[in-house]
Amino acid sequence: MKVLGINGSARRDGNTAIMINTAFEPLNAAGIETELVQLGGDVIQPCKACWACGGKENCVHSADNFRVIFDKMKQADGIILGSPVYCANISANMQALLERAAVVADMNRGLFNHKVGAAVAAARRGGALNTVDAMNHFFLVQDMYIVGSSYWGMAYGRMSGEVEQDGEGMETMRSLGRNMAHLLKALNERKA
Image: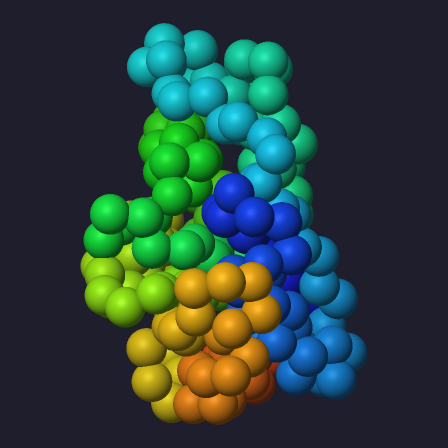
């Protein structure tokens, strides 16, 4: 089993990456492989609404890293989406990624059925719940299962590393990872 984490932050290895990596710890301890994709430094182009992806199971445009990331999403059993709060919402790169992914998945139904998803947001002060909600909506319309935790998937910190001072937020990430491992193993046993 494998879980793909996608860090939608412009800052590689910042607070959002720390949160995803913290959720990875119990997944790795449970023997589940993890991989982190970081969007920082790349630009994901918005969907062109050309509908050429129908029957192709990926976007036909290849001027950015979307196709590679989307293939990783299809292959993963679980996906953790993470974004910092930008204007009480997800980052522009995460928005572009999810919009394109949703169109490709809508044109090729069933690509994400019964995968497990979780959303996390790094916040300075407010907007984290809207940010988590935006990512969860992607999971909901793709017939995916959403994993919960001991609280909403958010932690607070402005500068890189400050989320580690949010003890409750970090424990929420670990709980999220434990719950995702539990659900993935239960679903895997059910398949057998």
